[in-house]
Image 1 (cartoon, rainbow, N blue to C red):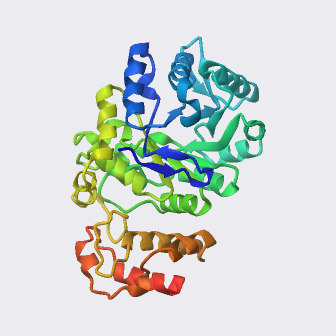
Image 2: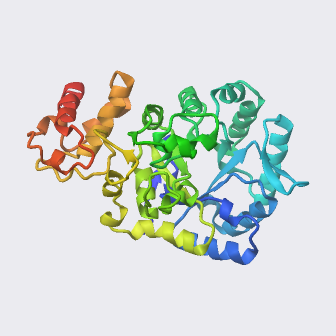
Image 3: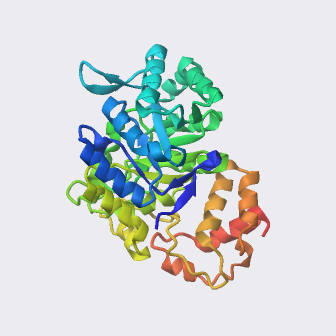
Length: 385
C-alpha cells in the first residue's frame, strides 16, 4: 500500500513514489494509459513535468482530468518547446517563460499547477540572476494569482540550491539524490557528478555541502522531491555504477527517502516493467530495502563514522529512536543553536538521549562505526534531556 509524506511547509501529501516524465516522451496513447493505470491504481498522486512537450502535456491533462484536485503536478518554468528542433530547451527570457506557462495550462486543461519549478539552476550566479530578475517576479505573480500554489527550484548543485532555500522564496526543492552524487562536491557542470576521474581511489562520506543542504531544507520546511535516484539507471548495473557494485531500486529509493526533508522520489520509468520495479518498494520487506550492508561492502566508496539514518542501530533496550535523535542533533549542530522546530520535534520523542544507558549494543550493530554513545551525550547536553 502506498505511503504518503508531507512535502515540507506546503502541507501537500505526496506519494513516496511519483512519476518522472522522460519515459513518456514520444510514446502513444496506449502507453500513457497503461503507465497511468499502473501508477494511479498503486496510489501515485504526483508527477514531475520538466518537459514542455505539447503531446506529453495533453496526454497527462487527459488522464488526470477526472481527479485533478487529488493529483499534484510539479511543472517547470523556464522550460520551453522548440518546435523546429522538436525538443525542449531551457530559457530565462521572460516572454518565452510566460508563453510556455500559458501553453502548459492550456494543454493540460487546468487553471493551476501545484508546484511551479524554476528549472535547472546549477550555479550560484544564475540563482542570483533569477532571484532578482523577471523570472522570479513572474513566478511570484502567478502564485499571487493562484495559478501556482507553491514555488520550487530544480538543481543538481548544493552551492546553488543552498542560497535558494535560505532565501525563503522557494517552498520545494527538486534535487538529485543518490549515494554516489552525495559524495561529490558541488559543481556548475552536472557531468562532473558522473565523471570517471571523480571516483578514482576511495571516496569517504557525504559531501558536507550536500549534508548541510538537506538539513537546512528540513529546518526551514522546504520539501525535497528527488530526481536521479538511480543515477539514470547506472546504480542498478554493477558494470556502470561508480560504486563498483549494483544496488536495487528498493535500496536506492530507501536511501533517498532517508535523507532529511525528502518526501517523494520521482521514478524515471521508461516502461511498465520499470515502473513496477519502483512501485514494488512499497511492498518490499525491510531486508529488501536495506542499503547499509551493500554500502559497507562497496569497493570504492566508504562511509566511516557517519550516520546514514539507516536504522541498523535499533532496537535500543530503553526505546530510544537513535536515528531520529541523531538527525535532530545534526540539525542543531549545523546551526550552532537549537532551532525552535528542531527543539519541538525532539521534545515529542517518547525517549530522549539522556535515557541512554551506554550499553553499546547500537554501536555493535552499526555498519558505519558511528560513535553513537558520544552522540547521545551531545544530544543530552544540547537538548537538556
